[in-house]
Length: 232
Image (cartoon, rainbow, N blue to C red; front, side, top):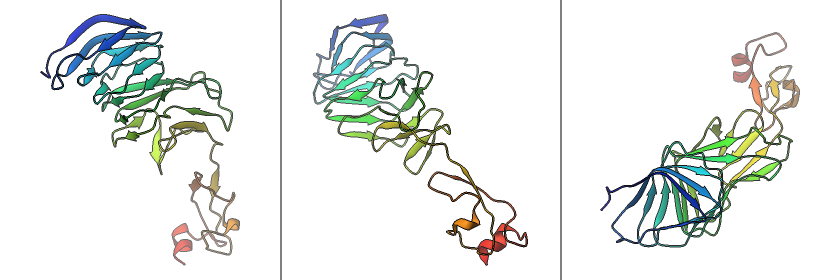
């Protein structure tokens, strides 16, 4: 069936193994609390597995290749281990996944030659110990066959033009699965001068580039308003 629950006050997999061994139409639901240490395996061998439990720990979770999916569904996960995915992994809508970002290139991640990874939930990036030097980068998701749903978000970041930004230089790209540090955008203020061309660098206090914030005030040599300048 699809309604039964297997509940543990705190199931600790310290290199252990959980396997779906029922029929393909049976949903294996694991509830309450799950801690992953060392290198455990969760194997959706004969049907889908839905982990409703709050997942904690730092071990590497192995997901073997099968025709069925292991889904993380809790919004209170604190797990910061690595995923080694050969099979199918899903992050349900509103479920969270935490990434601990450290020195350049140091972080937990999702990797492996996965059959399918579907991410519909919330990424939480712990930047407490992140090295914010411009140019640093961290690969969060490198598995093949990864897709991001419309409900996938990065907590504390704002989405625009294919990128998630936190306003302090950290940028996450779904296309690459990487977080990187970019130079903070400058403010390019409209001056107007003798030309009304948007593309004329002399009309700006700083020549604007991609990602810059544009500040509009009085424009034109005679102080005419911006609307007049742009419509001239």
